[in-house]
Length: 161
Image 1 (cartoon, rainbow, N blue to C red):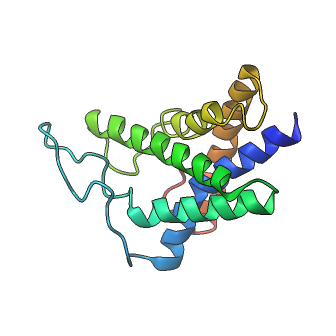
Image 2: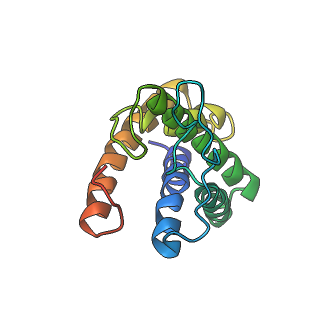
């Protein structure tokens, strides 16, 4: 496994973890849903109440700072966070269409888009192969499931997933 692959994995983990940490720090302050509570014709929210602007900004800021600390340009971190957020919002959109509640569990659907999108889009920047992208996504799924359970035990997450 290359240093670049590990750094990309770490940055994707940070992009996905920053919204959780900012929720713990700010509680309900500045909790504005990304979809502003809009419902579609199916009478379900576009993304759901757990996807907030606060979380997006935290992801963008934390991942940009982490990228810089790792020797990458902050814009690299910004792009990774952007693609991770797009993946996460895609998952939420699909879950709402499947009548799943916000923050409900959907193994694979919860992890794959938020790791696959940034890995694919940043593949050239981090000089990783297609097989490395697959490996990164598999590792991310395992790490995310483990971290979620650990953060739940520590009282940081509301659910063990």
